[in-house]
Image 1 (cartoon, rainbow, N blue to C red):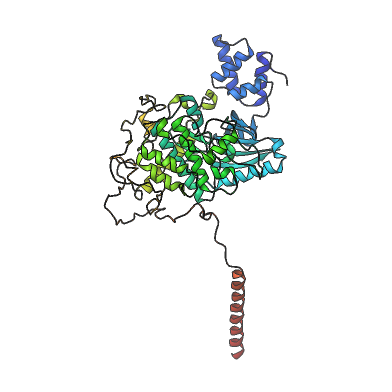
Image 2 (spheres, rainbow, N blue to C red):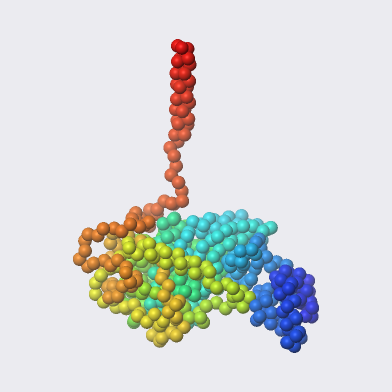
Length: 527
């Protein structure tokens, strides 16, 4: 259909689409006529409808192209296009009946015809379905509408770390530590269910309006970033998975046999990016960067940001060790060594760091996804609080902030009036620390905890000279030690029964019945 030339043409398209209820559309048009504010130009009318939350930017764009179909997929209404890439598009959608907002990744029809691409799409969905953690973008469903295959995921009302740093520059040290600390908890959860991300980078980590970080899965991650250094845009068994600026050295050699230590390296490179404002090796071609990750040591972060504590620099250096055996072996070790610098509040981002949506897309949305995640985080924190412990020692180089409503941008140390106490007071999720001391090799001499309790009032403290402690009851009170080389078995897989055990039980039952029958016949015969 041709693009609308008159106001009536535009209104007809909107009516045919069904995106606006007839009574609401009529009332809106009557109001414009009554007030004498009816635009005379088609584009201006579309703009007014967007401004007044009648339609979204995406819908207006489609109407101006003369399109009135394609605004729904399955049981969902498309509101905005929030990402795109070589493997498809991602939309902010709303369930037609439940009115829940979700992010939907749509695989293009031409990709669905490629067995490798379609197979990878469903593999990603199955891997994501095994993950359930407040710091990971959740996958709700995978479905098909005609020749369109799509993945339904949690919508995160926030921006990626890449977007934040590109917009504001190097991040405040407290925020960078906090987001890294949250992210390693997500990596720990994924590791424990047997999932390795292999593409950790700033563009794959979102921060919602409450300050909670969320890692994107492999599929969705491709669409929230605009980087040009993506090494794989389609599945290839010989390809390198990852991004040149953040890829682990061993991953450039064989990306399919790496373990969680590759994710730890990439998380370290991401941490470096947050503090420095650029990747560890920002210059050169992709090949130059890959070689640098294998052979060079990045400029020490304290040379760029002197206010970074020496202990934090030590953690960062160990995360990015070239030799995997000298690197942290599990995300839990990183968690333990960053814990002394964690304040008791999440640091909510200022409004100018959040994404801009049309009024219709923003209308009635609230932050249900984020709220549910933070509620879950609060529950987890309450349950684990009795079992959580903190180190003791001298003063930390960088003590937690005491001003709940304050914050700093880009390491300037200035106060940020946009950080409110109501937002930043929400606690992040915690997972149970390992029962034995961390084997990271970085002790109290390089990392000392702050005087105040960074985990919240009333939390159990580890006494400096205590050697005996009665464990509190908890649903995760104990933790089986694991290693990167031997990941834990999948908890969702039930133990297999021994071969033939069911048949033996049946045979035994038949023999029992036969014996009972013989006894009854014998008794009857004797009588």
